[in-house]
View 1 (spheres, rainbow, N blue to C red):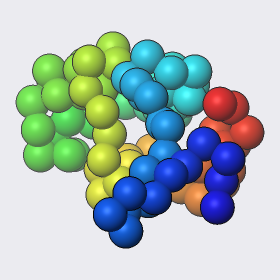
View 2: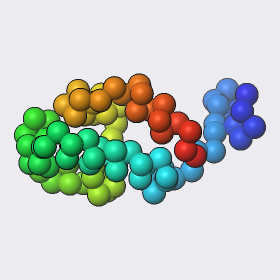
View 3: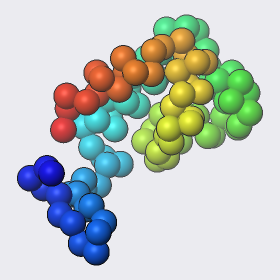
View 4: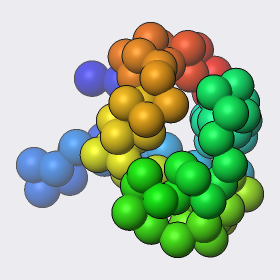
Length: 94
């Protein structure tokens, strides 16, 4: 068991803290913006491919909205990056 985790009523609890303003979150957002720009997509084009409005991508890129796992996998496909390699890159930052 990790040093910052506890078990209460059979449920493992860790001390994750707030993630919306974390270093990892900031790096993820920067990475996604860089990938989008590198392949020459606008926010509107990415949003259209995603089946969403441009404001959806703007909220992701401004850090106002979290990316769930399924969205991350879809972004990896659309922005042409390896999701596993990307996660390993962010893992070392805490």
